[in-house]
Image (cartoon, rainbow, N blue to C red; front, side):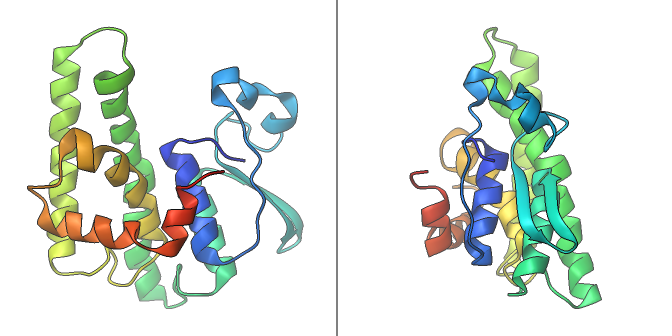
Length: 200
């Protein structure tokens, strides 16, 4: 269940990288379709993305929250997106949770005050721009010594890519973050990413 938001693109990106077959069902947020009673049974918090897997571990399974969906897809795909080794899993988890809980949450506030807020609120714009630059710097430092955020390509990269892609090249700029730009461009060139961000 998809719409063209950062979190929606994360789930589609994860599905493409997983290699698993899937069908997209659009949930038009502009038309408030996320409040449809049938959708609320799948995603009680009326958020996209959501996932229904008719071949879950114990039968049909429903999932909401992009981070949970990415973790589930990575485990099911068994192709390295979510590693089996416990130490590597811990490394992936910290960046997966950073991307899901911290980075996207703050990026969405940045997007609201800079792009969608009907009022000009300079203090909020300045606050969230500074937070975004700090998070970009954190990622840039991590990527100075790692090809991908947790060493090897994983769901952690998927959790972080959407908001870097949406706000990095234009709003924040990547010129001051050479490692982050290298990572962004590497991810962007992946065939799965080209498809995930293409027509739906």
